[in-house]
Length: 180
Image 1: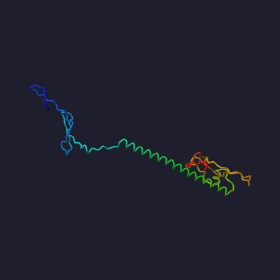
Image 2: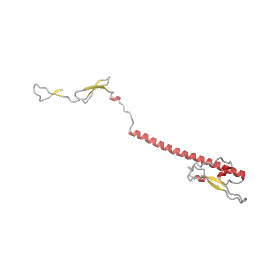
Image 3: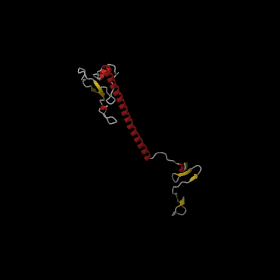
Image 4: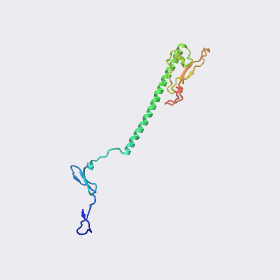
């Protein structure tokens, strides 16, 4: 507090000092500081030294980079997954075509005629069931190729000579499944 100029003799007018803007460390070992809330009150509180303070968290650019990497890896994973599913279906289709053609050949070797329909392969126990086409999800969509008329035996009925997929899709190698 200081004496204000212009005060009358005998009267003392005190003007408050400006509040502190710089803080001093009272005891360096305890890291206590005196904090003035106003010109009337002060209190002490314990603070960590400013050079020991650390800010934890991630910046926005770090989060964006991580999210971009996650999106790229997820996209690659989905593409690989879809490709592996298609390869698995192609493998099943090749196996089904092999089994159907093998059953047709066994029927021809046993009876010297081709079966009139695929269902005859099941009824005559060459197959347990007609397999489901993995791309059309149906056993009724198989496309049959009928045999040509036998010139040596004109009374013989034409039968199923070959079988193909009924799918209109294209394989990974670029050929249509109906040509396999």
